[in-house]
Length: 396
Ligand code: AMP
Image (cartoon, rainbow, N blue to C red; front, side):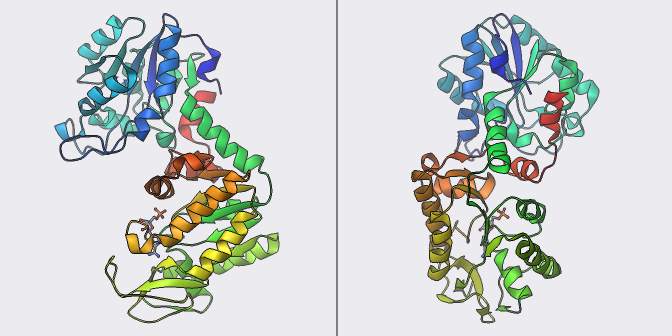
């Protein structure tokens, strides 16, 4: 895969697929601009080379056609501030206005196109729509790792119109390099921490990791399906009843492969799914009826920390409890802290996107781990060993 370091953009118009799908409040203020700042190095490199930039992205999930709610016009001002230059805007991603504004771009200038998903052709991967977009630039750059697992018009299909002129941006390249480092070249011991709500979302990844890791820590809501499958009582805790068999199979496989699996032994329980609920700490396999496990307990934290302190590569995907509520964030915070400590002593730590990234951000620890991925689903699929359409399209 060629990266933008393989080309000088002087005099070229770069059409860049970015992921500017940022959260907005009801007054259309950006509440977290990480996805925008993550793309800045790529944009700046192209501008510094003497190129011009046409940015395309989706925002949210518009149902049918343009709406103000999902307009990318809301981010123009902030993007202009971040880049230190006035960013132009085309209020349709294809058509005459976009064509004229793109054609008129001079070196150092930036144009943002309106939301790609105002056209249903985007998500359908429509070839004719992709071809229309492709006419706007001389060179195609994909820096949208977060949508690379989708074969959409702008993320994959469009690449066929840029033979020899398609490149990965810096964000895309570093996401892949970091994932590859963990999958193919981990310093040992290698520990994966899996958490979050559902086992079913992570089965493929867990199976894949059993061939790679030395330790597998399982926490969060998914741990109760394991506890129940092993004969425990779990009260009203999260359960995927139809996945119990599979949970036992995973434990067997781990044993056969010599992977050390560490499950929670104690659990913070609550009598309601509510920050103000009554709480108690009990053994994970002895949760009474009417109570649900919402966080890992102190003994579990100590067990997990001991493994993490001794790890040289750490992959973390999914919180240890309902970290969105202050009374149930303790386990997730403690694990985050243990990952930070391990990183300080030389471990490489990769935080999967989605909720684990949100947790690390909530605790202000983003800069104290090795890498926080911007991709939720995309990272999971990459780690599962699937070929991402957006990555494949750059390689062909
Ligand atoms: P996922 O998207 O699968 O990584 O799941 C993340 C979500 O799992 C977060 O919103 C957490 O609040 C939730 N979660 C973690 N632990 C629990 C638990 N013990 N009970 C209910 N939800 C949980």
